[in-house]
Amino acid sequence: MSGDDRVQMPAVKEQDAGPSPIDSGTESREPTPRAGRPHGRRNRILFMASLMLTDAVASLLAFYVAYLLRGMMIGPKIGPFSDYAILATIQLIDTLIVFFAYKFYHRRHAAILLDEIYRMFGAITLEYQRLMIVFAWGAAMVLIPFGRWGHGRVQRSLQRRGKGADRVLIIGTGEVGRMVLQKIEHTPGLGYRVVGFVDVNGGPPTVLGVPVFGGIDDLPHIIESQGIDEVIIGLPEASHEELVGIVSQCEREKVSIRVFPDVFQIMASEVTISDLGGLPLLTIRDVALRGWKLTLKRGADIVFSSIFLLFASPIMMLTALAVKLDSAGPVFFAQERMGLDARPFKMLKFRSMRVDAEANGPGWTTKDDPRKTRVGTFIRKTSLDEFPQFINVLMGDMSVVGPRAEQPTYVEQFRRSIPRYMERHREKAGITGWAQINGLRGDTSISERTKYDLWYIENWSLWLDLKIILRTALGVFLDKSAY
Image (cartoon, rainbow, N blue to C red; front, side):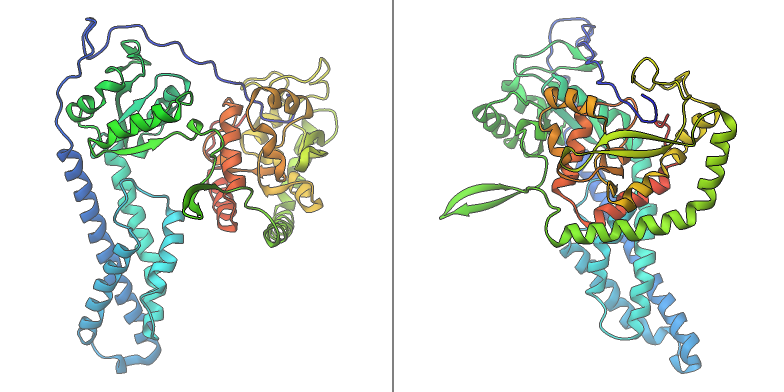
């Protein structure tokens, strides 16, 4: 479709009917005995110990940097560094205690740097009361996250090679189970390794090349013999009784249990527990962006889009000139899209296709679409074609961050086939979004993008917007899914 990234619903792959790697062609699916979980626990302890050592070194280095800065201000009166050894030791112990209190050493997988900085801010701030310590606070805010970033790179690299990765068992061989498998296989840095599947009715010998060990009744034996660390339940069709039974079977073996949100359908966000006169209830967060938060987000949109358009204007002028010289037709392409409350608006982009691209009606944009111009191919890959959308943001039709805007024709099509699709329109459409930075751009499932959009709507914060903008800016030239 001219001027937009179009996606197709991916076809669900058929289950592999080939021989199971466990039984080498036989019908038996008896799991092969493997080492138990102690090895996995040992790896987690090593990761935790090395992370504590990283934090300790960074904390002491931060204190030394503070000492040097203070020395530059007051000169020799500061005295030798040995005079501050006790204070440095107190800071080190205090840092480790506070980090333990904040559960910074309970993680199994490396965190994103931006998330580390955000969580560190409050924890490190607790430690400092006096003046020289302000310097140490500033240095710690830089050095400790940097040290954790380096530690995370090493940890992800090791887990990508299978060292210290959690052994995962997926319950359910349907579309959800296969989607979870593909996500884990495509992102090895998550630190997971799928050992196999369990199906309600036993299932086929293999699914996408991964063995199916048996049915729900076999869970305790499979978890123990395969050394499973984590179980992911992907059964959207399971009843309440079935789900409780599965969780009960898993809990007998003391493994971590995760449930894919589709099991509850309505849960796209964080769930809290409340009560009604002593009766426990689950509280599901609704739209987070209400009241004064709307004003805050709108103010941030105006400031950010104004600054962006000011500094990007030379690039936009050169892009406009290149589009005009490359092919006949207008510089901009305006297309009707659906925004807040499903109201239509004209979304602006630099034209990347021939003028007659939609002569036969709108159609899907493909990777090697012959309708694209030479300049259009480049500006789409680098996302330069989307710069004019900041004008839409300034005018109030869009937001910098939000669900992707779609054409009315496709909105009507998706609303009939995708549950909760229209709830995306409870907020303004965005130039970038939570789905895009998580790889759901281009030839990806609209259904999956909708789930990410709903999570964003129900969990909005200004920090989340900032993180999405920063990750978009860092990845814009590396995004291989853009075409």
